[in-house]
Every structure is written in C-alpha cells, then in structure tokens.
Image (cartoon, rainbow, N blue to C red):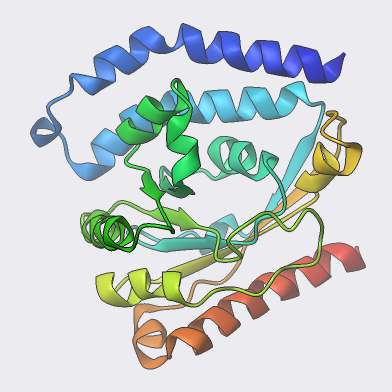
Length: 242
C-alpha cells in the first residue's frame, strides 16, 4: 500500500506543480543573480523531494552541514539507490543541479523541471554530445551553480561502493572549483532491497570535508577520485560503527 500511495502522491504533486514550472520557464535570467535564481527554482523541487521521501515512512539523519562551503563546488556522492535523488533534493540544504544519464530526459514531466534547475543529461554513448555536456557543466560551475555527480556510474544497490571513475572529476579541475564529497547510506533499503516495494528505513547523509581548489589542482584525476572515495568510505564506516 505504501508503494502505491507514494507513486500516486508523486504523480499528483508533479502535475500540480505544472503552473509553477510554466512561470519559472518565463523568468528572464538576466534579472536575477545565480543565487537568486537558484533559490526561486529550487524551492518546489526541495519541497517535493522532502515530502516524497517522507511518504516512504523513512527519515534522514544529516551530519556535516558545516562543511558546506560557498558555491560553486562539485558535489560527489556514492550512489546506492533511486531514493538518493529524493534525499538530495529534500535534505541537502543548498540548491544544485544533477548530472544525470540521458535516459532520464525521456520522462516528460521530469525533464522540464530538470532543465529549469540547470541539470545536465549525459549521453555516454555519444562522445560529441558528452563533450558538449562536459563544457556546459564547466560553464555552470564557473557561474556559481553547484552540480552533483555519481562517479560510480550506476546504483550500487547496497552499502559497498563501486570504483569511482576518474573522468568526471575533470569538471572540478577545468572549472577550478572544490570537490564536496557526500556520503549516503540506507537508501537501498527503501526500495531496491525489497524488490522495488517501498518500505521505511533510516537514511544517513554525511557532508564530508571538502577538497580545496588547491588540492584539486595538485592531484591527478585518479588521485582525486581515490581521495574523494576514501572520504566517503570513512563516513560510511562511521555510520556502520554506530
């Protein structure tokens, strides 16, 4: 029953926000600073993420919010499950955009919202389009817009992380922004562990100490990927240790 109600709630909420989306799409961005625009646009997605997450009966325990620095920065997280998205939307307190796989752009209601939020769609099978997306990501970061990447490339479906692919860290190097590692634990228990039936769980989100611009510039991509994953793993170990 929780699964059906969550899905119905999600669809109704997204349809209800259609009028808000229409208004936001008409905004003249030149009239607003990046921070002002992000605050306006992110308000509804944040409400949706939090309320949809709560419909599962789950709760989020957040640590390390003092590590959130002034934008821009590249948020790098481990990726356990679909509910990672709603946890980020609802509980990471600052506005941001996702770098998502191209398949998500085929969802009619979701795509226009993500476009307004300055999210990016990455087509890994099309090198030319991938390069365009990469360049757009650098522009957004330089403009002061934080972006989220999941360098595992897919959901891990559990607590064990997959290896981080180093290529995506070039965004931070090219844009000359810090990397903000974020650990999430427990989202896979909401859906994936239950054969896609929704059950409540306790989810932990830890914002780790950022990797400064100076550190980013002095590391190779492989070193940067390894250091980021190590910081996330340390936070994950802390949660498991209780």
